[in-house]
Image (cartoon, rainbow, N blue to C red; front, side, top):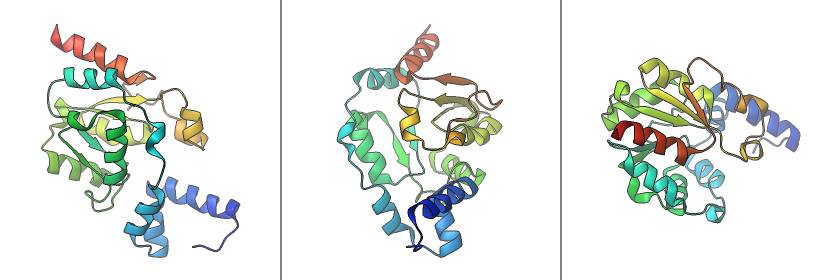
Amino acid sequence: MLDLPIEDAHAVQRDYYQRYGTTLRGLMEEKGVQPDDFLDYVHDVDHSVLEPNPALADAIDRLPGKKFVFTNGSRGHAERSIARLGLTSHFTDLLDIVATDLVPKPRREAYDMFLAKTGVSPVRAAMFEDLSRNLAVPHLLGMHTILVVPPGTREVFREAWELEGDDAPHVEFVTDDLAGFIEKVAGAIES
């Protein structure tokens, strides 16, 4: 679309992602790109690499309250991912980038829309995220914040800055074992 060599296009993508929260928001702001085709294209991925995670499903079930997925991705992508993991019935709902009027995390407006649409009370909630920068606003709002850095993260994130911040003041907990972490939390709540 930009008619650039791949290295230059990647530099533009990285710049938009860092400045706007998502590449899509940058393309919309800078190039007037319409979101639907972009979202369909970038989320046309092979979900077969995801395997059911019964331990995570059991752990999530032990937590009290409603559970939501809040993603900068598309609803379809999130639904396909959750289904592959065997977690579909474990969440009350999911809010995608479209549900926040294409305003991405980490912008405050995205979280405000999430809270308004779900009725979640921040001081009675926890936010699990794979990017530290997306935990700054939830922490400010009073949520407990957990940075999830599973094995293989280096292969998913291309840029060093995406892995930064595990020691930031807005990150209360860091885990590389989400199911195990949730089991410990659920056990503490139940006792």
